[in-house]
Figure 1 (cartoon, helix red, strand yellow):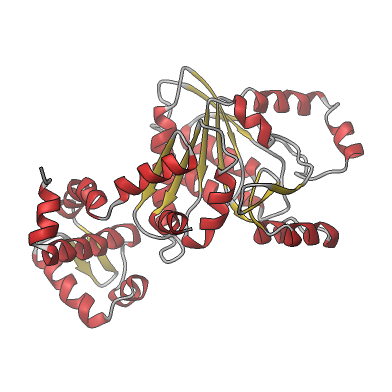
Figure 2 (figure 1 turned 180 degrees about the vertical axis):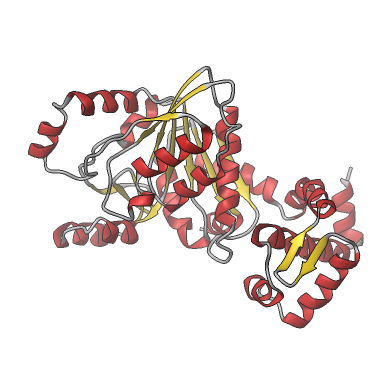
Length: 341
């Protein structure tokens, strides 16, 4: 038997196309509000003439409000968005892509949000919200959540609210030391924001991500460092992003000889200081303080969050070494590219 959507695809393909376009416009307005028509047209890649017609329709249906400050979605419009979410995922094939990726990458779960964060930066907010939703499902009575740094993890922190973990004890800890990037995106800062937004506790690990063995040995003798490292090892949930190998190597101010190893090894992705080629093989590893790749096999829930078509190779490479307990949260742009490889 055909489903209703399959019948509509056969008999009324134009209707579904129009519905998808208007849903996409309404959704974009919602996450960018208040937004002007010119800005929205640029983001959506539509002409102002085409967008004007669609905006007039949405306004006539009282799904948006138009003011001098920009367009916003009305309460009725938000209700329509929520009501169409499931249908739009089926129409666009997202549900099917999730299942295909889950099987291909051998993961516990794959979550795909519509859109491409390379083209629409606000899609990262959707990735953050999707991550929080999966985190909530995995909370137990006592939780230690280890968090890596990065802009995507910072977005997850912003998506957390005081309702998170209302019936559970949560402690956020940094999964690793700093890597010398923007302080607000380092693991310590992200943990602090997550704790503040949820009314939870957090601990800090104020040591560099990369240190010599001699310095490392002196650090790990400090009682306060030992205590935090032990908490990190006891984490029942880990949140981390996935980086482009070249971008991460430059961010770490990698030495020329190590950069040559990364380049000659054709590394495309990075996670936890490990650089992977397209086959998922480790071509270089930097000494890091905190969680290491082999530690993930003992952790019950690992949530990897990364999106954008430009990160497809990095995501696929890193996920080839992921544990079966890993949940990948990505976007449509990355998912389609991964499945095309």
